[in-house]
Length: 338
Image (cartoon, rainbow, N blue to C red; front, top):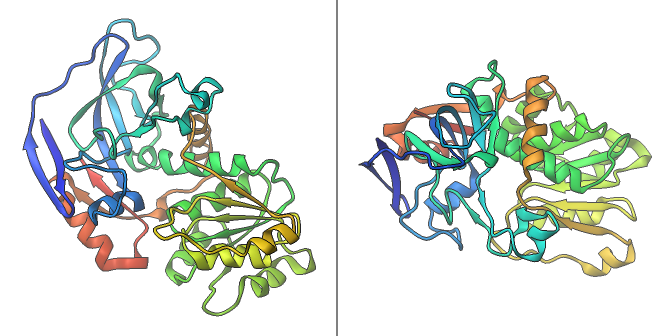
């Protein structure tokens, strides 16, 4: 079968390897579509601190069940599916209390463990998430980032009726804004890319702002009036957006941090303390977040089609990275078609 291996930063080698077979309690998936995410780009550039080479990438994906191992029940051959990519120990304190997404020995497929960039992939049955027959391959591959949005917004607690600022309108920010709306929030989304802001509008988030033209404070007043906003979700990973969130959020507000920071940001902790702000971390998702993501997309509460910018055939995997680099903020989600 075909397999794509990133042997070193910026280099993908295509290999022919033996087909795997499912063991007891395992499922064999035929991979159909893989999404390229921002963290994959860090690996491509050699800037991901926890990914060794060579590495088989791919953690956002859709597939079809090819075969099931002994003892597997409720998963039929031919069903559309995806799967959670975490490998956890099950024994550390976070795992024992149910927070396996922050396992002390967490490994993620496509980074510290082999990913799905190959025709067939074996996964444990308990990690498989079945998809509706109506799902497209793109929708299936977008379950993973949607689950990020489900988990992170859940970390913020009850959103119903709250004014919420989402900083960053890339794929994650777009989906966070959509899920926040599903949870009953009034949402303002910001980005320096007008292209991404237009995509946010296409996905049902009409209140947008470009920081090049107005501050977050000005945008908040325009959209929310004197009420301001009580919750911010930082989806960029740079100092400027964290600084804006701290500066303009209402006193007693919560800031959920999704962005992956390449450099340590300087935060005015005196303001955080003086205004009793709460900074909340969030990482990945749990199985139930995947299930909720499937429900939201299946019910058309979360719109995914405008997020897909381009697809590349598996043989041109490296071209997807070249395209993303060339397009810059004119690209959202690029897919690999198997």
